[in-house]
Every structure is written in C-alpha cells, then in structure tokens.
Image 1 (cartoon, rainbow, N blue to C red):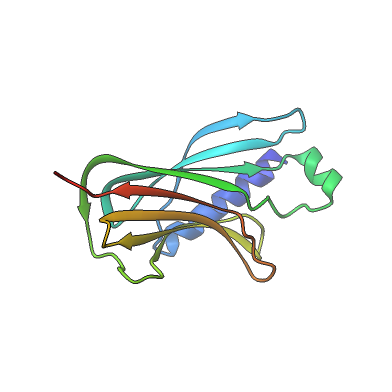
Image 2: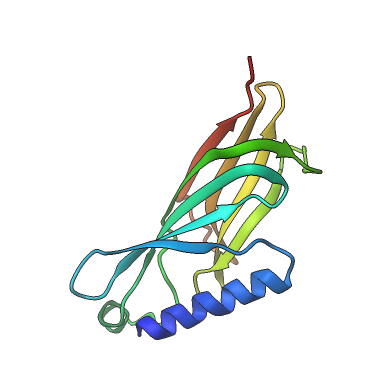
Length: 154
C-alpha cells in the first residue's frame, strides 16, 4: 500500500507541475507505528519569493490502517508548516490581497481533499504569512497550521 500512497503523491506532484504550481521535495519520513503509518516532511520553495523555504509535515496512512478504517483513498487533513528565510529575500509579483495566493497544493485523496499552502502578505507588519490547510468539497476541516517570515531589515 505504501507504493499506492507514493504513486498518488507522485501523481499529485505531476499534476502540480503541469498546473504551474511548485512541486515539493520529500526531505524526511518518520515511521510512527508498526501499521505502516508515516509522517512525511516536504520542502517547498516559494516560487514568487526567492529566499523562503517552507517545510510541511503531514500524516500518510499505511495499508493496515487503510484496511481497518475502510477508507482506501484518503489521508487525514492534519498538517504542520514552518517557513524560514533560507537566502536573500527577493519578492516577485505576489498577490497582496487579503485572500493571498496559493503557493502549493497536493492531493490527500483521489478526488475530494487536498493540502494547500497559501501566502498572505501583511504589509503593515512587513511579514509573509504561510497557512497550511485542507481544502475539501464539503465538510471543510478546521485543522490548519501557520508560519510567518518577517521582512524586517534594520
């Protein structure tokens, strides 16, 4: 089942590439139990803000867990995000509206659910805000994580 989960991740990654979004690079995998459940950590570079890298962690269910739960095609909505300056920051043509813009999206089920990372620019405080959240067709999840990158320079 690991291969199935990996192939759906690969498919999601390929869809992201073809849709113009940025792709994530897996940088870590932590086994959390004997059922094959893992925490996956991916690095995502902001395509419009040079010098910022986000690390997103999410849960990936294994075969035994999928059999027990009876839900073959979906992973939980939980995620965590941390973004940091990893070089000189150069801001490109970003959306400065209150709604921000999507930086990354990856499917968490075959059709209905995705993990999204949005960037919002807090101009008054000179801060980039990155929000990781699940997007679903219905029954939206309140599970989210937030990280900020200050642009303050003395």
